[in-house]
Length: 390
Image 1 (cartoon, rainbow, N blue to C red):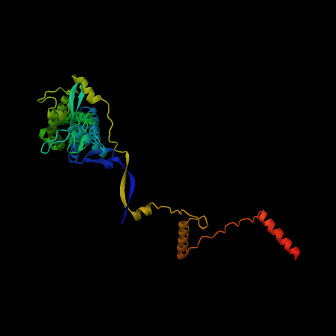
Image 2: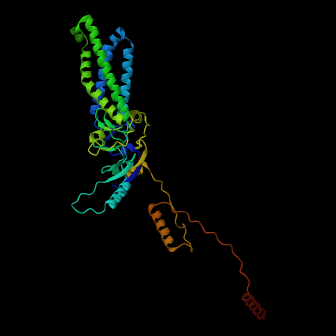
Image 3: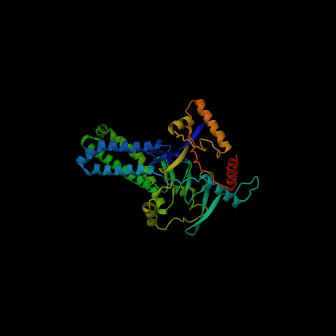
């Protein structure tokens, strides 16, 4: 059965390459591996729920009602920063179109020339100058582009990310140019929330131990024991991560650059992005402009889908129109090929039993009296003379 290609409009996020998952019609963008992200949400919500259930009623009565209020505000801020980091585009760079990729490959081959057999071709790099220092732009064989400065290809999401920091499984997304500040605010606020819950959980146990004893307090508040254990084991990692990123922000450096030793390795190159001032570096990273996404995930594009011809005919009926290419009634001015086509159509109408078109009589030309000429006058005079002689 033959198929017909029908073009339908789809959102661009449905056709984007890479290993990302989208929700809410492309508004939410995450990595496909989201298991650890669910664990993060469970730990935060679960620990805070235990704190609100066991500690907050006692502390609000015996110390201050501001304790649970501040805990709620801090919890909401932590969740907002987590969701903002996890559900946003980290700065994914679009891949080159087939025409662009072909043109770039031709440029590279023209620049490198013919490579002898058995020899490795030279690396595909371009040099740009940033703040007086040469920075190399590497070619991505997957995306078919020369990556901008500080960009890198994430092997988990299979995308090039601008100002790539790292891929964080705890937030279920890459951390890059567009969501790094929210990631840092998430780790900072989570550290404060963990310290806050851990501190007041200890205060709650101490205050109740004075009245009913330490063992009796642990028996009456099992949720407090669980809170203390969770906060104790997560406190060091979260606070340590926050301190590490505070150090990177003060130098205007990324985790990827620090691990690779881009500015502190054997080359001893200076960081061209650093302002040599901690305040300026922090202001650029945390208070700089919000960069728009270059993907246009919710834009419209056309997608050609094969559809059976019968289905296409039912869904999109094509009105049949009759186009007359020759007069219905042949006359002396009708070409021979038109006369044959008219005859064939008449035969087909007769076979099908359809009434043949009515033949319109051509208008009869008006009779014009013949014009008199000298020859006719002579003949008429001879005839009259003969009749007289007889």
